[in-house]
Image (cartoon, rainbow over all chains, first blue to last red; front, side, top):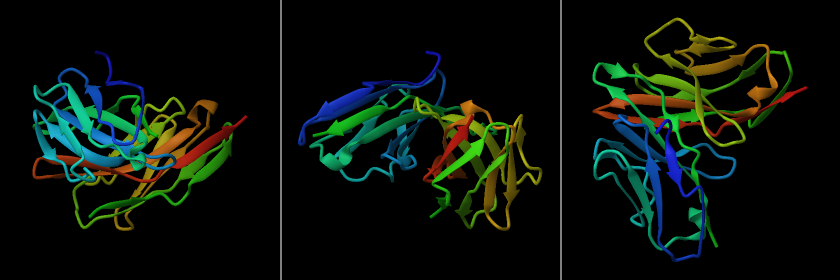
Length: 117
Length: 116
């Protein structure tokens, strides 16, 4: 696709339910990021993939959060036993990391707004 | 750990005027990248400008320029000839390549409103 696509754009769920958020990055982008943005805050790093592997998952808040990228393109962020504090916009971004250096530009999707009631 | 601080939660500027947004960061590294991203009300973030720390020359992109002070760990964004379309949240970000990971750290943002 032309840009980073995230689905669903909005998700309302009840406390304790399981949620999956999907990210389809720009074709050919090897790096994929998940960020969480609470109201009035900056994006908070969750996890970074280089290809299929999670190169850095230090931002995942606890073991209820998990993300996969099985074929090195589409990624899914999975949240188990959702809590009200998980309500936020979840942003996905992709980037092209060149061997000779870093282009630096992250291309963001429009985000998935998660509301946990 | 690296941190990025934006001390101006909100700012406003008259159309056609110039405004400067502040950003400071904390790192012990010497080689890194700095960015300004814009997030309009539609929510999708886009890159405004970037600076490589090893470059002494300040980056410029049309009406946007930065004042990069490496020793002071300061990276401010200047917007000249402000336009209504510049109304958005602006985020400063830091990235240090480290052992194959490229983790971007964002500040809390500055909400800029351009007034007609």
